[in-house]
Image 1: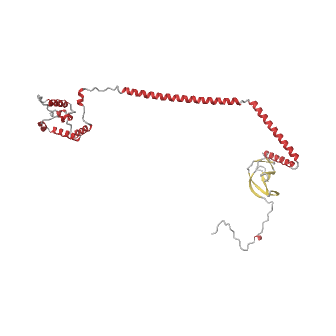
Image 2: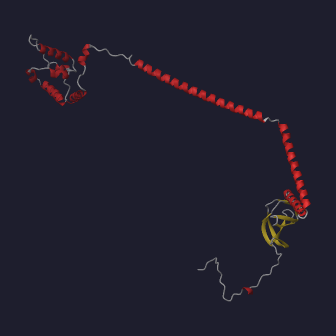
Length: 330
């Protein structure tokens, strides 16, 4: 399949380009182009203003017998938007601009006219100095005098301004230094006040903490201590914690054995005989401890029970068994 946009053309073997007929067109032929107005202009017929950038359908032609450095110059024809009068302007490659021919006047070109006048004066001066050395010396003398006059005028203006201003630079510098010192002094005072405030706050906090600790120390010994009676030592639990825990677990599983009603018949007090002082002492100790319902199990191993009482009571065997188990485990 052939391509739509081909680059290589086919030339037959008998192709002769000299035989191709040439189209003869006039050199001053015109083309219709779309362009924008290159500058502000005003129509001479009706006075309509045409601003820069307005679009026109213009006719373009090549200017005959006018060339700048081999570049052709083109002329454009436009019509006024109000009266349809014809306006023409052409290119100016020497100044990279456009020049107005007829039909309108160019507006706002004072700067361009000034530049053209300066160029003209400079060109005339160069032509005069080209073959006249005395003219060169004269022009240099004029330039130096003009420069001296400009400097003198500038100096006079400076002195006049200083007289009117009445500005004392030394007083300004002194005032600036005073302001700087005042600012630094104020900053130091603010820093000192902040430091004092922080120290006072820290000291007050420390005083509050010390007073709180003193009050706590004064309140600790002032607590009421319960008074101890001589007989309270008999009610204290002298068993170790592990044994007490085992006894409590046994009481929860089997039952409580140290109630007063149950232990009332277990302890028998022997009558005192002249020869047995140790037994009476033990009996008195048992009697005192049996009055307390919670301390029988701790004092039971120190009692020597009669054989008849031990055989007749199953509870006594059970109490002895539990106590021996606790003593062996300890």
